[in-house]
Image 1 (cartoon, one colour):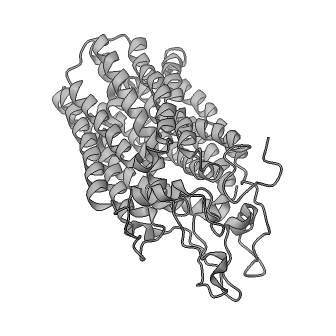
Image 2: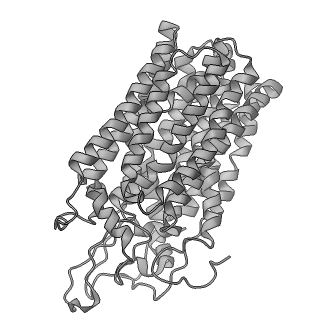
Image 3: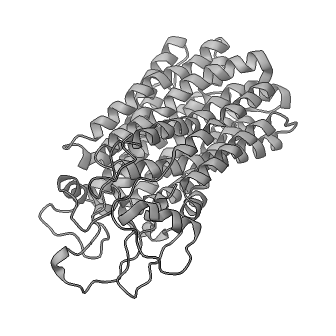
Length: 500
């Protein structure tokens, strides 16, 4: 499959076993993003059995999404310590166990702890490691790979929503949760696929007689684990919080927080909104499938578009454009009542939603670079968790109080559009650097503060001494002829994450 022999060159293979990793990442992304939304099909049955309102049942999806995002730093630490494959295997078991236990719940609190906390944690332990491993296998084709992996979300959403409706009609919500729990065991099979990229060249020296398990597995990554000079100690961090000082990361984190407040609200409440408007249950569930079908086309297409040489340096602006389009879609569709108007909304929403999904992680990796991507991803997901806990439950409470969905679309659309405007303005005003000016000497990597540095990295071949796996960050490595005197180089925290 192209992964058995040594790799040519210092960069990621951009293929070979990476296509199997991409397929597994496709499935994991589908479960991570599609599953919490598809569970909304069961909300009316839960409201009837537990005597609850929209805000009470919406907490199930919100807690699941909050765990998916909020445990990002924990996932980063576990992956650094144990590697991607063991963490994903355990995550698959936890996700399945959560839904199986939820089928026996007799109170809403039990649903929150099982379907919300346990399943959400299991999905988180699969989602982040799969993205990390995908970044290790792709560099030149990374935007396309991210777009194809992100397409798993609409594919699974379009399949899980009608499936959940059929399970609800034939087995009730308890039987549906039980069968969905068995379906989540496929995450374990995806975790088994995540083996490290083959590493050419000599293995790095050990600094001590014994290495921790995560360090021992990191040796499989070959020369990408850089050594300190003779007599120095290689230091590694489980979570690099210094990335918070990067201006590009700060802009991205604020954008994602604003985005997460409103992005998921229409998708979570759409099915119940349509049912309350008199749409038959099967047709209401099919609305999410329409979003998914459009999303399936939008994500790979947008990923391929972002990979073009002329557009890749400006991927942050494409991301902000996608956010503004999504927000305007919500605002313009607030008064949609008929089924045909809802279908039109789903088409426009699926297109803009797919663009956001295809670009969001590419923008983060371009901003902070591959070595710091795992830590940055964990911290960003933690911020998103807070926003997700605020957004959908607050929207459900407003629906209960006002009996009107119109204000929900206005509120969600304004938040997402504001995120897009902030991203564009901050990128243009705070992160741009003159083309002819040298990069700031105190800026690590150069790509963290604007698209200009990213363009320079993309347009040149990596230097001989650079051994990072596909990052856009121009790490300062002395050229071979600069002499033996070199400063001590810390092992980048993201590099140890290449273990399985």
